[in-house]
Length: 284
Ligand code: 13P
Image (cartoon, rainbow, N blue to C red; front, side, top):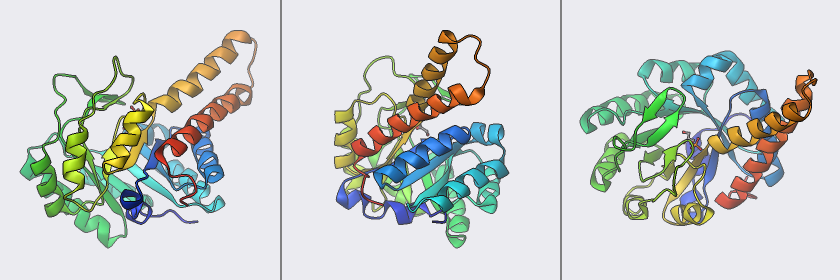
């Protein structure tokens, strides 16, 4: 299939109470592992690309990888910019072939976040591209983005409803207690915020920082209106730990396929498990 917009893919997720996984890609092996896992599970899937990953892989390589994956498998695939920081980077990605973009204006005052996101939604929708917005401040570290626990702030439900009504984003990321990266303790998720906002807006809610969240909390979040869950760190840990073990056991190994391949298999296992947890298997 060709790359599809997020709104096509997420339509029905909220009512049917499943979520589509966004799995971030960092290289060829991540891309292959994620598409193979999704195809075997007959699940729609979203390739997330952070600005850091974009710098690492290059815009053209990124789009080529995602398009090749989508063209070769009969499941819906979206290529989605993760935490786009400016109008320019969002437009560059749309022009290059992304089917979906996130604009993260959450560090701006509400009115400014609304104005900037609205402008992006207008342009993106003309191009058939979906938009995810963000409200509240999600803690943790992703690439160069770092938010301390003290600076993390929950989204306010009344602001979230106003944000959606004025911007009409296709998906809305809310800060509800999850964080990017590895958790020190168990995350305490504000399911009440998810439920209140989900009941008042059409768009599905996005849960960032999906790694390390207990399965029961993920199921509960989805049952309250989360339609997209983002996962990156667990895939990074699985592949790196696998590669580290192989290299430690075989210090003379020099063929990269001999360790990158098993690293890829480890990512595939994580993605398959998450897809089943999110309930998006057999939904393609
Ligand atoms: P984790 O790395 O914590 O899974 O979060 C991923 C994410 O939210 C990407 O936006």
